[in-house]
Length: 84
Image 1 (cartoon, rainbow, N blue to C red):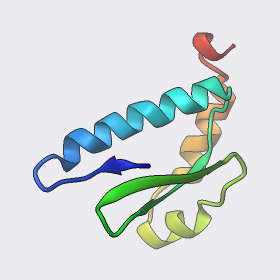
Image 2 (image 1 turned 135 degrees about the horizontal axis):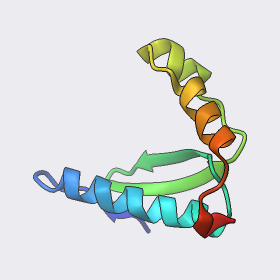
Image 3 (image 1 turned 180 degrees about the horizontal axis):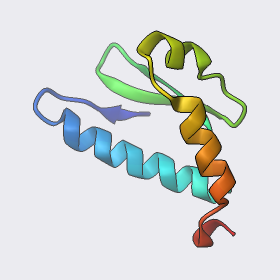
Image 4 (image 1 turned 90 degrees about the vertical axis):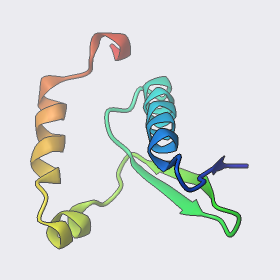
């Protein structure tokens, strides 16, 4: 089972998916996890796993993003009240 992505609604679907994943991480009391998804042949985004020790360095280096800095800042700030 997954979330169907159809042309014209991908932005709406991604916002809904982002909200569901954030809620899922809050339920698990996780501040960070590398989320693995795949797109099936019938255009569904299928959740595979949430890895709290996931690797992002390859993505940071490939895209020139400061993911490490953002995660470190988030962790230093501590958990939001709803997760405490």
